[in-house]
Image 1 (spheres, rainbow, N blue to C red):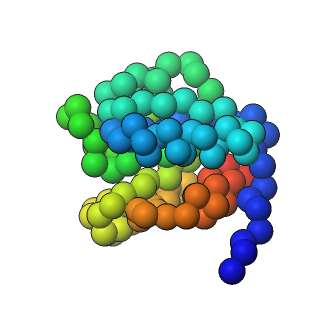
Image 2 (spheres, rainbow, N blue to C red):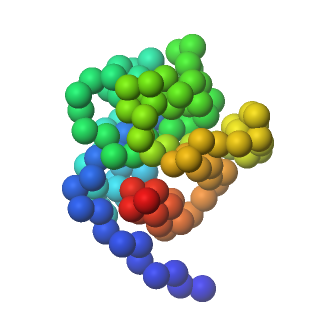
Amino acid sequence: EPTAAPDPGDGETVLIIDDEPTVRMVIVEVLEELGYAAIEAGDGPSGLRILQSDTRIDLLVTDVGLPGGLNGRQVADAARQTRPELKVLFITGYAENAVVGDGRLKPGMEVMTKPFVMATLAAKIRELIDR
């Protein structure tokens, strides 16, 4: 069944943190086609360095399981120390409750379980940015 095309981006910047280059590449490609600026990081520490810089980030899309000593939840929580309004979309191949941990996500945080359709991802990104 065909789905409506997601609303395009308006130059918002999305940071994608995922240790799988193919996943990053596909997400970046979709985002750029939709008019977003995309920044990539392959592990938690490098993603956190970007988040702790003065680079504009409108949304963080991060895998939960990351190499380098920081998982996606830890990166998001650390980033919110300096960017309390940062919106976060966790993507994971694990059960959603493994991400949530204490049973709740903070406002502006959501989870999508892999695999997902890119149109669904694009719609979720738009929804989070518009909040």
